[in-house]
Image (cartoon, rainbow, N blue to C red; front, top):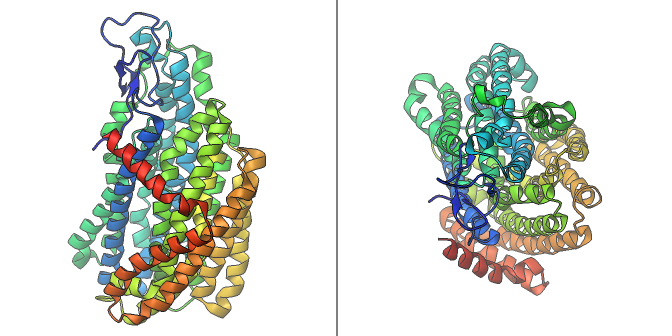
Length: 577
């Protein structure tokens, strides 16, 4: 199913958002204006389109998470939680950092608003132009021509440097590792993702701004399939190096799965012979804003600080007994599933917020942000209750087989329960950072907030690891991300969008009470059923039921209004079909 918004001219005739922008129909008169691809199709209201986009994105996100789970299960089954898996996870730090910088945070937060503004200029500047002139002066194509070649060269250089400097990278990431040779070999393979992730992230940002959500949502399905297939095929020959090679293959698939849609909707810039048709002032307007230090530095610094929490964990855990890094990794991957799913609505609506900010519609942006915060908090807190309440059963069902022992299950489950305390913070940081970067010129405040959170993480982790080991590392992570979330929540209103901070905080507090009651119920009820699969399955019913009942009792608005919202979204999705 396609979830790609088609533009429409004011009279209602379709105008597809193709490679060179909206196409001019045969016989169309000179001077007739067209609507950009950023606008919803006639007869398809924005709410209905977002419902369909959210549903499709949710399905593909869930599929990507499922394949990610199979990937982690395969790693645990083949390599357990020992030296080999630790070496691979150290090497995996590079693609994890690259993913945050080049797909999830920095690239999206920088390029989605840039493409949104270019689409707005395209819509405003087409009157009186022929098709050839519009194609040559298209702000979207000028933007691609000014940024994509530079990005490719930069990322290729960085990837080569990482391959050569892999021993130094491993020494910095895990200075206490007894034998770093395997980690170095894996790092050289995973370093190739810097280039492929950068291309995939650029494609995703451009397509989301054009409201084409299916290819970007499918990238993690292809990524995890590439890893799983490579591991299964080559693990007997290469050992854990097959997992690192799979990461490189998966990164390539992430770019390839989006390439056809990118060519169709965006293109690679106007031909050289035609670029001179655009006034120099217009070409300059599209170039320097994206390469100026003051524009990209706040976004990159925010993303680096956010992902550096993983670096802190690996650094502190390297000196702990073998398997500590693996326990932290498995616990974090499973614990963050509710957070990933809760942020899907923010991913879909980010272009809407950016375009509302570009058009000066701040009230529309405020309502959208407050709605997103409510829905994301509800989803992540319900998932948190399940993750904490049924942690041993979940880990046992997912991983306890092959080289992954029962002792590994108990250690991972205990760490996951501590990680769960920070899930709301992770969700709020993801949801709140997007409005900050929806303006034409990003602000430094998110980087400051994440820097403060990282400082809390480093100081608390350095102190706690000596006393509580992996539990102390996970607790420090929760404290750091929660600090950043509080700063972003309190700082959004005065700086960017005047959301009602107190109202939002009270709503989240009520949802937290409901989550606490549901979590306690699951913690008590989970061990009563010996079979872990049956226990976890019943927990998937018990926890939401208790969450909903408590939310109704304390009159949490998001819970009481949820049945009506689900019915409305279902009706919109049916109408959109």
